[in-house]
Image 1: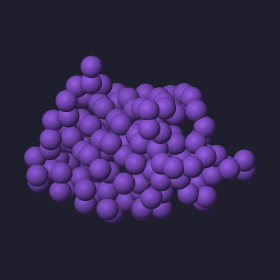
Image 2: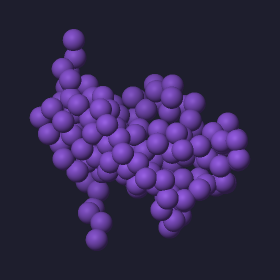
Image 3: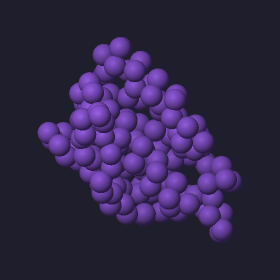
Image 4: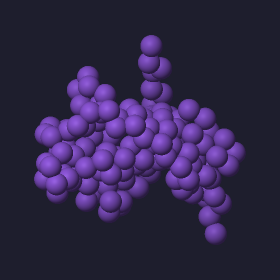
Amino acid sequence: MKTPVEPLPPELETNIRARLAANPFIKFMGIQAPQLGQGYARFVLPFKGELANSIGLLQGGAIAALADEAVAFALYSLVKEGETINTVEMKINFLAAVKEGQVEAAARITKRGRTISLGEVEVRQGERLVAKAMCTYIHLAKK
């Protein structure tokens, strides 16, 4: 059974959406964020030729980047003022190829620690599981 997503306070959602809008990589990739919640983010990536590999499939790095960004933005809802996060490790399993359409990444924070946090994400195309990843982030005070 899936855990329900707790909505964000409006001001926090506005701040996170502003961060998304200002992110050049998110814009370049064409990632959309239809849902944000406490420790949760759902991102969508439409297939486009610029993200394909030499055999016409969605490049694995694009899928990994989508997964990493989804987990990072799920974690932003739990980050304290004056704190930043960086990915320190990511483990991803690619389970199916994508040659058209769009993929969706649903990310949840599994553990929000004091200095290290862990998130997991499933990337799907419809009901088909395309990739599954675990991401570890470090929390740093702003300098």
